[in-house]
Length: 128
Image (cartoon, rainbow, N blue to C red; front, top):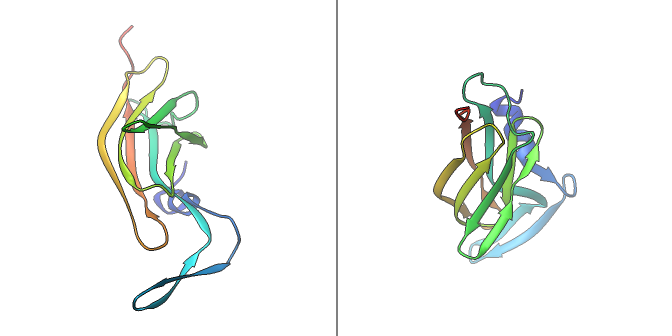
């Protein structure tokens, strides 16, 4: 199980360890890290048991005509909107569970990276 601290550590995937790139603005250069950050992270759980439920699930982000498949990370996380700001509708489906949705999830960015939005999806078992 990923704790909040370890989950956050896994959100930023370094492309080049400890490398810095210069970004500039009117007040001077800003040092931006060369890491890839996801705009949306979702902790996916079985709502009844609390167990990780990302394995076997599929998820999509949509913003207008843009559609992205979420990446499953471990047994309890899905990631998407890598370095892409926007306002997304989120859909997670998994056999045996009701669909989970979130509407108008807004990802912003600063001069260097997106600001990650963390969600929790508690999946509800579908009636038999």
